[in-house]
Length: 329
Image (cartoon, rainbow, N blue to C red; front, side, top):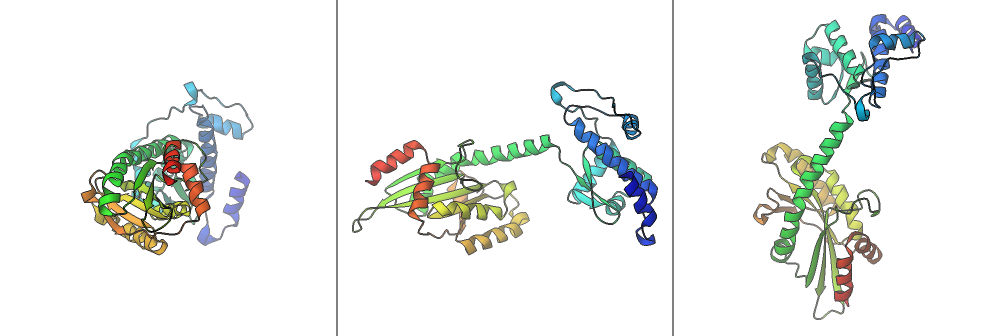
């Protein structure tokens, strides 16, 4: 790779010339990133001297293992923290020239900090004129954020279920079901339910008997719940996937205090919901139906009986299925 970098420096045109020093800096930083990646498997640190020794033909690298395979990372310096903060403000990725101007740093200061972050495995190089960098989010942060979002969403399920069962179905929508069951689908662990977007967060089954019509009529309504920091148009597409085995599908969106900030996103969500016949309910307090507003009404579709039956079989508990069999007769 070093040979390629030097060749590029010699052959480049004047307008795209890159100094050998900068190219070697990029080459060295990439090598440092690779070593940082190896560190994540249980190596705490690898010195720059040992890294250069490896390049010269020495294969042994001094390293110190950390207990339980965890990486003991050196605290970020003030410059490193500022670099990552400004990069985050640019969306997590930026060209070197753009970021350097944003930081208002001299060349040497910028490149030194950038290279340290690359060796730490916190950045990766990108393409573009003058090169670019992208923030790499540590796996531990991704896991922590995902776990937090999941906890926030799960906390909404129980109060929403109670409102759906006790108020929304009977008093708001006036569906007049003779029997209803509402369950959480999200607590089924790793049980296979049909692939991506096959499992709604909540689902409702309602049975209705009409005096002048033979048999009983069944409705399945699914609900995809999104907390205030997870609202985007993908919720509509998830609900649409659920409706393959349902008669109606909704997305329930928890509104932030400053609703105006997400109004552009809400407009897209509502427009797509109308286009696909998906209902949208917006709320601030999941336990208070007075804060619920149905901004888009869900269309009822004539679901394929086989898919409807399969959805109930796969998604609902044995207790609900037993009750359905008993009461549908």
